[in-house]
Picture (cartoon, one colour):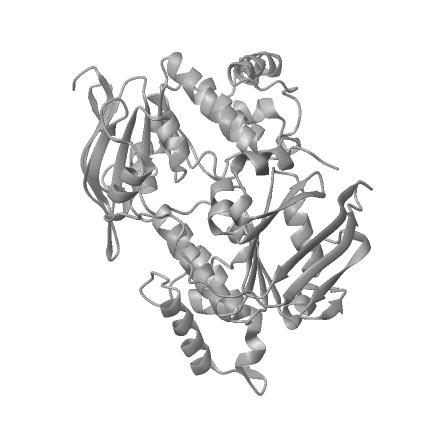
Length: 510
């Protein structure tokens, strides 16, 4: 293999029962570059990287992996790590209770005779943390770090294994803007030090900002590779290759319709965290009209999710010091999510895997779970009615799966999100709170979610959308509120809103 390339994957084909996940994929990565791998959910990106790292071992696929000029036969992750390949997953593989230094050297401990040399482990851990620009005490438990810093510990762990190629799988999907930028800057530094990076990402703005080369996969096949210096790597061109068609406007136009009366209002909400005694929301006021999408913007930690949970029956037990919720003209003080749902308020959580879905169960189970009373036949569930309901939502919102018996864990992120939305549509809410509705899903699935949101408000529903992606809030909202440090710091009509205005409000508190 040409010494210019550190990696070449030739004619890789990987099949699962009934599905060809990779179909004759070819993928080449230059030494010391940042190579971005993009495609819709289910395109084969993560599967290709699992083949490379040895998760899918040699013999379970066809084709060749050529690394540093030699054909490899990785039968385990340890085999690829021994050659200098590390993979950092979206869900971090750290032990939260253990100190940072133990996490960094877990599995390849520094030994002194037959014992672990803890003093040297701490010394070397400090050096690794310096490389990733993380200034913390290595004896801190990992759980004391925020998500962005935990991500840096994962990178330090990879560097401690003397890796030459690091694969980042959706590294910024759960990071705020500052931590995302910090991670991208670190990748540039890694590149300068001779380390090759492969990044899987749905965030095309980050891809175009950092990539030297971009490879697009679609339906398990290689569509193209583009050189950032010579090819058109505009977002619109990448999207065209990803979905096989042009999406002229990422945010679909909505049919004009008049807004109704105020459907939902939060008045003077002040909330305290009982664990710390700190006020997390201060005199929050917000209203939504019938048929309106209202965006709720702010930096990570501004209080957006806490606000949503406080009014949705307060499942985390925050101490509500004052304030009231008015839904469809009636004042409420919801003691539980069940009460909120019964009154017509639903909440789609940002954590669909942890709190939103029962992943080991099928689509049918997940869709009907919040409203089993509507399917009751005496003391039993009318199974035939349940099947009809689940199929109705599967078809209406285009959940891509062979049947409603498909286990939810086996769906792509975009289809899991559609199941989560479907389950709340089944309770027929008047107001739907969507918390990070497109996190970790591809541009094609995003477009479908946006189109679904448009249809919901055209049918008279009201939506509050919480999102960390500012272009998304500006593109989808009729009106938006900005939060900072638990305060509402501004309200803007969509026509007047700009990124600069919103960011100015997001970094100021009253």
